[in-house]
Image (cartoon, rainbow, N blue to C red; front, side, top):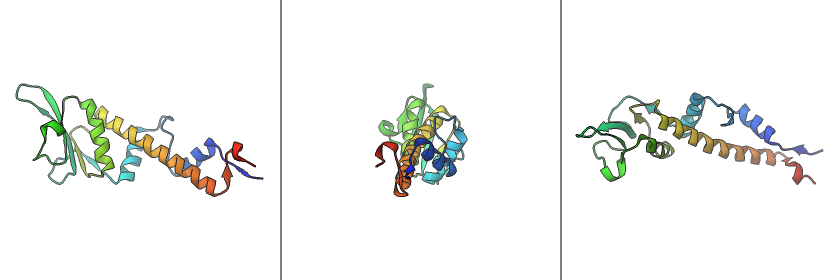
Amino acid sequence: MSKILTDELIEQTMADQGWRPPHFRTDQEWQRKMVLDHYEVELTDRFDNNCGYYIYGETTRDGYEVFVAAEDVRNVCISEDLYYYDSDLHDALVDAIKDELSPIYLDDEDADFVDYAIEELYQELYDEKYEETESELDDKGYKWPDEEE
């Protein structure tokens, strides 16, 4: 009798390793921990010159709020590192985490763009882990029902 591979088996195997499905009301703090541990990145609200990346708000001379996302705060490129909308910062944060630019300074660790970035990265990691787990189970002799001989 062959071993049957199912989505439930894959998800249970992943759950045993600490991976919870993203659609299963996974706690945001749990997702954050899994993502940051995977990439070996730390988020901090403590500004210093040793950070690998910085994301923070500034106010222009005429009172508009803009956002900076840069590796070097002493050398900000206006056309590349300045954002008018904070909702666009999640892409910059995703890239910084993937590039392991740690620690990453955030002047607001609870901003919505941080949650969006973590959710996006967690989904990517979960999908990768799902495929990895499926392959490992296949190597152990598990087969999808339609692949059985």
